[in-house]
Image (tube, rainbow, N blue to C red; front, side, top):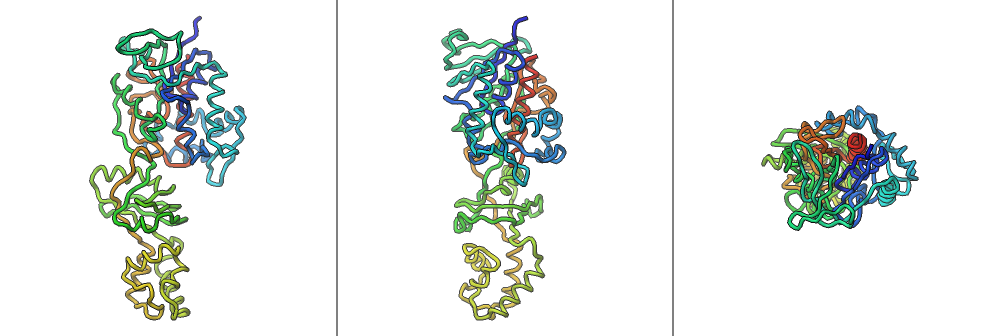
Length: 426
């Protein structure tokens, strides 16, 4: 019986996993990558450290995907974090698990993961063709039978057609060419275009896990300041919609950091709907307003001859003190015993509710992932096969699934790739 021929589009984590898995199942696999080298985006993940999964138990793990978790539940349960860690171990990659469950290669080098995946796939029989851009899918009836490309160094597979490029025939095609984030790595939305041309619905694309922009010059004044263990509330049209505690970082344009990135999906959607968005920062979440008032009174009584800008060092990073005083109309050289009751009230309220108006968000070039994509209602979660086109499969970021930071998105890419690789090769 002849081997099934599989074409995988995109040599990122999902594509490499799908290709290598299909080859292991006995299929003849061609992996097409538009960039000169495979795994470029993978090498940037986790700030170059590659946070490839998280050991959070499955029920909680799924919640990090929001509505998309329902689609992913059975997929991830079949190839979960323990399976991925064991798989990486077989590739020679030891894992380092951090206190919050995030898993990295022990070396801390993302390129180690990318190289190991490429070597595994090629050793397993996958034929990799770089600099190969897929222009369209070839459809006969309701079934995909191949692709047309430009570029490619695969002489044996070429069938020259001057207007449309070269033709690659196959029994199944896996679209795993990523989203639209970090476009300089090759993620330019090709998968959405290909899916849409054969009838798939594309949920509108938005940058996700992306820094946000704020009004005025406050953030610029605080550029580089990192605040840990602060609480952030997101107010949309003056109503609280979300709250998280963690770390944020001030940038020249606004806010970033893990907590802000995880809240950015909600913020981006609200801004796209022209709704007012405020980020409220509780700088001292462990103390209530009354306790802060007592401490302020005590410090101003005990150190009444000190300037208020000195007293506030007990409560705030140095760079934040001028912003605090300016926001509350208090001269920085005023001594403690001269601070009025009204001014002290303004201070304690500000420490619990430092507000910044959100005016925008950064582009796809700064987004870690893409929200939106191929409508999961049109994809079988048991196989990743299209419900519209027989023999067409999807894996990774091209699907309308996205999650918080912490290794969840990469696990989803590997899990969907593993499922697609198995299902397409049967």
